[in-house]
Length: 200
Ligand code: SF4
Image 1 (spheres, rainbow, N blue to C red):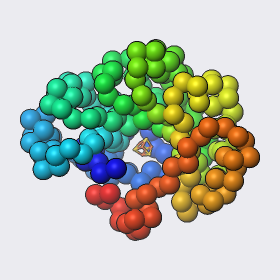
Image 2 (image 1 turned 180 degrees about the horizontal axis):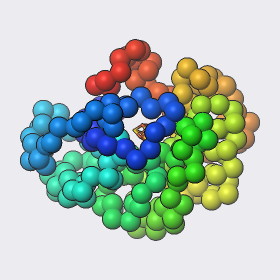
Image 3 (image 1 turned 180 degrees about the vertical axis):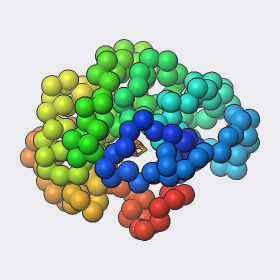
Image 4 (image 1 turned 30 degrees about the horizontal axis):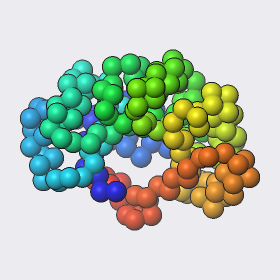
């Protein structure tokens, strides 16, 4: 679906495949919440996704989410799962990108977030868990996580193979073989705008 990205700078991880390294290797530009709201007026009716970097590092992130929701935006927030989601607005949709071993960052996951996702589910939140997969090893690690924490009963689970490392066709066959209700997510930006590093 059409989506306006609010991409915030700074990240506490250094994933091996990071395709947004400029968010932490280059200085960001300060923007007030009013300026962000004004910019979004150019894209009426589309989803608003807050991403990074790691957006939960920003001091005013919860105020930004509240202002967006109060102004009628449907808000998604993508987070790398290493910081607590306890204070995230219940009307925002969290996309929790749990890092697999291929990222080099899998030990940084804040496991208490599983409990918090469960609590959000009980009050009607529709969050998502995503695993970006670099290899078959990542696939098996992710399946183990899904099964151990029964994540597929908790929220929608997406497997997103890194296009040039793990063929999506292979990932699809493996999902079918496991018979788990996992959604395959293609890296649309790499298919639609190949080679374009920014602005997608
Ligand atoms: S969490 Fe995201 S922005 Fe941060 S290093 Fe990993 S891929 Fe890059």
